[in-house]
Length: 371
Image 1: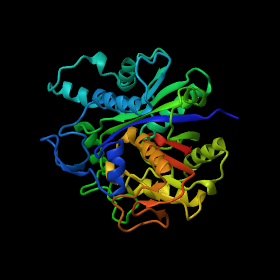
Image 2: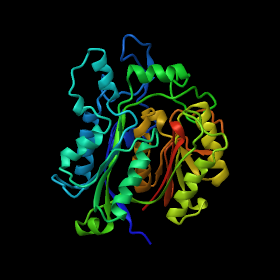
Image 3: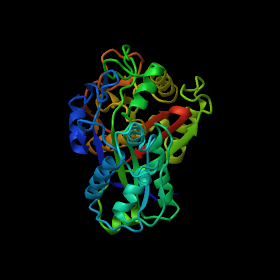
C-alpha cells in the first residue's frame, strides 16, 4: 500500500481574492467576471482580471507560493523541496507586448517554465524542478507529478500546482475566432451557456509525506488518494465523442484510490460553459456515477484560468472537504442536464471528492481527494 501524500498548505489567487476570500465569495454566489476591454484594439469581453491590467506569470507565482508556504508554516531555504508548477501559456503575454514594442524584457526570464523557475529560486530548491504543460489539465498533471516525487522517495515535500495569465490579444483573438468566447458571462451546465470566460489566477500546494508532516506536527487539508491521466488522441480542440479516454482517466483515479464510484460524494466539474465540453462531461458523469452525487463548476465565479483551472478546482475541493460545504455552480439558472447540480452553498457530508479537467489536445485529468 502506498504511503499517504498530504496537502499541508494552499496558496490560491483568483479574481475573487486569496484562498479565504475566494472561498467565502464563492459560497455567497459572487462572481469576479465583468465586461472589460484591457486592449483598446480589441472588443470588450466578459473577463476575470486579478488587477486592473493583466498580471504576468512571475507575479502570480510569487504570490501563490508565498501564500502556500505561509499556510504550511514553512520558510525558505527548502533545498530538498521539489517544485512542479505548470502553465499552458507561460509568459505569452509578456512576449506579445515585447513583439509589439510595448515591453522590454530579458528573454531568459520569460521562458515557458518561468513559474517553476520562479518558485525554485524563491525556496532555493535543488531537487527536481518540473514544469508540465497539459492544456487545461496542467494543474492536475502537476499535482500528480509532485505525488510521484514523494512516493518515489526523491522528496519529502513538493510545491505543486499551476499558474496562468491567459488574457492576451492573441489568446482572446484565437478563442474569438473559434467562437468559444462568451459575450455576457459564464453559465456552466446551463441551457443558456454561450462559451467560456477567460480568467487569470493560480493555485499551488505544499504536498508532504506523512513522515514529514508528522515530524513537524503539520495540519493538513486532505490527501491525494488517486489520479488518472489520459489523452483522447482525437482532435486539437474538440473532445472525442466516444470519450473512452476521459472515462479511462476517471476509472484509473478510482482504481488507484481503491474506491468505487458510489463512494464519491462531490464532483468538482471542469464545467467550462461551452456547448461541447459541458455535454460531454455531463454524459461522462451520468455514465459513471450515481444521479445523487453532488456536482458543481466554479468557473462562473473565477472564469476559466486554462492551465491553472484544475489547480484552483483542487483548492476549492479541499476547502469543501475541510468545511463539509458543497460550493455552488455560480451562473447556473436553468440546468441543461439531469445532474445533481449544486445551486447554492450547502452543508453536506463529504468524505471523498473528485476533481475533473479536460483540455485541448484531449488532455484529461481526474484526481480524488479525501481526509
